[in-house]
Length: 187
Image (cartoon, rainbow, N blue to C red; front, side):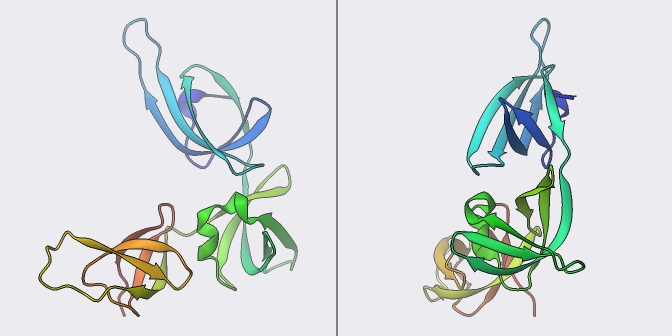
């Protein structure tokens, strides 16, 4: 058991009979007789739905061990993504809906951590950033301010906002948690 004030991103908890992964946790201490509160952004590990809660800081919650194992992405099979343990060749399937919009970042042989709760796969942990090629964007506009952005479609189909100097064919670094442009890749 943990108190709500101890919740941290990456933890798994059981709340209202369901398993949740903590995506964000923000603790606010109370003043005087007012107790603190912890605001959390959770993902349901069965349905993939997201929900925000405000817990009293002293509320006790059941923490559930979350095991991470390195896996390699193999292929998509309908609505599922198939991963293989490179050491044991064991394969597991995860619904794309549980992976979320980052599912489009998966490419064959990409190494990721698959997270397990009670022996079953529940989510995928991506690296902090990935490099992706820009498939289509408007030509650079050189007389624009440096802080103006334009839309770009990446080779995996994701639409992002990029600075004006980015052109079709450039490779950019994408922050995986927010699917947002970080910078142009070197090389």
